[in-house]
Image (cartoon, rainbow, N blue to C red):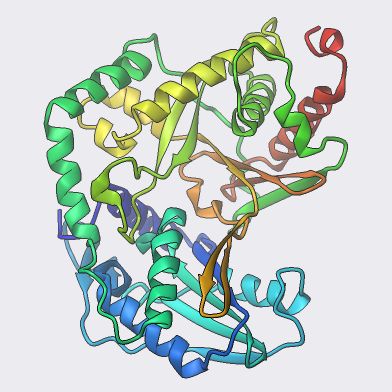
Amino acid sequence: MERGLTQAQRYSLTWLRDQRELGTDVPANMIVMPIRFRTRISDRQIQTTIGRLVERHESLRTGFCLHTHECGPVTFVQKGISVSVKVRRVNDTSMASDDVASAIDEIANTRLPLSQPPLLTTRILRAGFADVLVLVGVDHLVFDGASATPFFDEFVDLLANPATALPPARQFADWIAWQRTHLDGPAGKELLDYWRGTLGEAGPMPRLNVPTDPDSGRTSMQTHAVRVSSVTPECLRTVDIKETVTPFMVAMNVVARACAHVLDLPDLVIHTPTANRGSMAAKGVIGWLAHSMPVRVRIGSRTTFRQSLSQVRRAVLGAITHSDMPLLVLHQHLRPDTFDDIRLGRIYFAYEKPSSTVRRFRESTAELYTVPGGYASSTVGNGITIVVTEFRDHLAVRAVAQPDIATPILHQLIDRIEQEFGALDRPKESRES
């Protein structure tokens, strides 16, 4: 493995190359960071500071070649990179502004050439010299959602004290080396024993056979969404169950029950993202550390909502505790048929909630916002991605699938998920019938 290239990156790059050869219109997979300043700051200061961050972190100077190596994609780290920014005048820099929403959407759909680092783009939206929104978009191949925090912290520190030298940055490649050592030791054996028992020795793995429509002529990912106005996010926090559960667990239970019903799959594996940053070695690292963890649940026709939720809770807690072992490392140890069953045709679930982080900056503040969206490129093989987003007064559900997935299945899944969420407002007796 080349320096700085993980198995997840290699797999994603190979999949991306294959999709391009098939003519599939793969959506951009950019992570967008809106950072708002309410104090005097110049465009030159912002551009210079972004450049310093790119110079500090090798992952932000990493590029990829998909077709130049017989063993597959390769990576390289480029030196002496210049960073450009685009500046635009707007009337309002708040996240509710149409101008901001349009700019975020533009960045989110930007496809950057993988062989021309940095895989980063920056827009400055300025409503005044002391009212600035900086939009930084980075390709997910070199960045994950949790990388936004160290990026934001260093960005603010360097802007506030441009003459101060920060401590040497922890590099993504150093974290990869730590991960290999960690997984090769006793901790790796313990993790492997758990996953073998959960996935490899707990009975035959369920295979997801989703109806396809190969003659549809579609070349783009399919997306179907619905606003669930009948249920407020508070309903996810007041479920009547003895154990402590989170809104994430409740939403996953809803999705699992819908998939079990629509796909006729009482034993299913749901993949969900984990930040994978529980070790000190990951502190301050900018790169793609996150990976998906498989959660196996069994939901029969007579399984009540509370029973399946309790099962989802146990499965999620067990997966989180053992999430240091990436799925793509497991394939070296599991039977090939077992790995294929959990990798191909998978259900991918994500739960999002808009939020912000505020820091003091000079006499005012700097604020980093999270932007719901993405996960479209997470659908691999014959799989479906389902994203539940929590807003202040409603939930939104989005299903994304490969072009050849039969469209009626997505509509049925969305309808069933909406029904399951609606049941949360019903009395306990009717919910469990």
